[in-house]
Amino acid sequence: MSEMIAATVEDSAVDFELCPKFEKTFSILGKKWNGLIIDVLLEDGPQRFKNLARRIPKCSDRVLVVRLKELEANGIVSRVTHRDSALIEYRLTTKGKDLRQVMDTVHAWSDKWFSPAQCN
Image: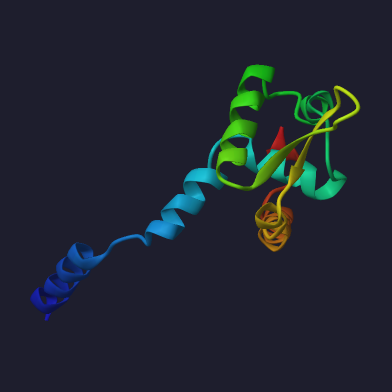
């Protein structure tokens, strides 16, 4: 009986493969700061760089620039330059806004499983 279970475990381990779409999603969302950037844009709407930097103070400006470019390249954030001024804003695309339910679920999960003391 144990040989049969071991064979089943071996077979399932060999056949297991993560969905490439799932891997791609977590390669984006799992990068440090990306979730917070998305969350700020979901909660506060379009933001100038300095406002994003102020809302995520532990993220260096250099890293924030890199993350915004990556999110833009993946179609989650758009960089909007206003014609009549030097104002540049970052906003979520439709694809980015579709992450609201995911972020709400993450918030609910973290509220359930982490106390404030564990977050320092």
